[in-house]
Image 1: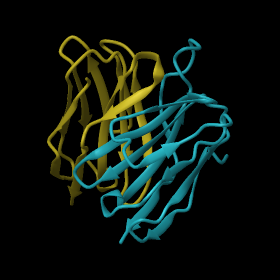
Image 2 (image 1 turned 180 degrees about the horizontal axis):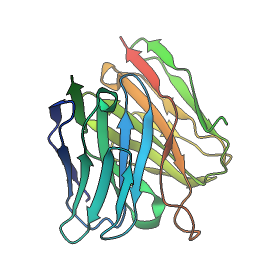
Image 3 (image 1 turned 135 degrees about the horizontal axis):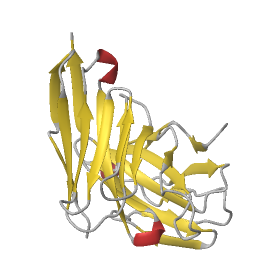
Length: 112
Length: 117
């Protein structure tokens, strides 16, 4: 059974600082997904990582996947207030069936 | 572009009442699923479907029923509501991997906030 663990669960950052959110998963998952959720809103897809060594970047966010270590990271560069949100990672469980198992989320607060 | 549409957005029920949360997608996705989101728990899979006429249980299926008569629609039924079912419910869809296309990326509806008194 796939389990997905994120840390930290809460993160308070100052604007301009860098930080990394970690996502560990327990069994083989060849795909890893990152989502963003603003308070009271739905989940928005950020990154889809499809293979070992995959790296994707969008603005101040960069995600990577190491399937051998069963680890994905979401790196935040020079944080700004607009990045304040909850970030979820999810692994694929059930092969081709498409079931995603989510971590508990990391609530990020960026303060001036 | 409508994407995934959920109704209602808000609902209050009394214990023991039944209701149906509606979900429709217009992307011709074969895979659809229902999640519930509770504080500190992330999202937990309730039921899913890989195509019309095919449904299966997820992690937390008890107290819920689903059907998939068309590709577009995937309603979630609460048979006899309990306070423990107070939650935010998200419907999501994606292309499956089986066709050799698609990334499995889930597209979510806006959510349905349910309170059971």
